[in-house]
Length: 110
Length: 115
Image (cartoon, rainbow over all chains, first blue to last red):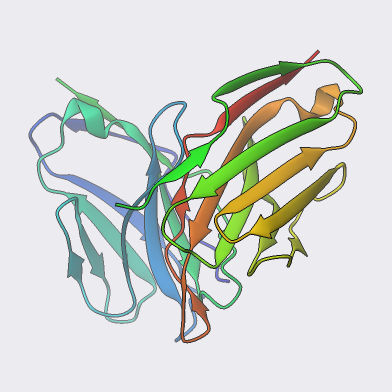
């Protein structure tokens, strides 16, 4: 599975959009981009995933560039409860194994 | 909603004890996983299972074993607990579609302290 690169930390004002970037320049054609988050002392929570097209659900939007080498997770109206570590993971799904990097610590501030 | 439950949120054991961590999922998922999470090391895969009575080693299986006698239950066993197994243990499950393992759903975690 391809490796991902994320900034270690970001801040966001409450009520504003949080845009979390992820680079995955070695992604293969059959690999998906997954986003999970982990709130302190809890298990990781699935947010969204995509292959080529942009995706949106009730939690977030995922924008994948046309060359698929990077993506952005967008939380449209961040709240204090969105403070967490966000993980971008690339996987083909063949083995089901997920490789979690260090992620981005998002701090939402009042 | 998918629900993955783990038998304990917090556990304290002594060195040399045999420790059982239980995980149960209610979505009839084929695949189940055990991870441990340590500061600075992220989540690391210990063992996983694609079906009942099947098991595969992950990246750090040493000192652990697993059991999957029923589809919904996946147990992690520490045969003789050691202090370096103090960690947060996370269980996850996923379904398979057309040979592809889908989204993993995680339990709340068990924080194990070995004294």
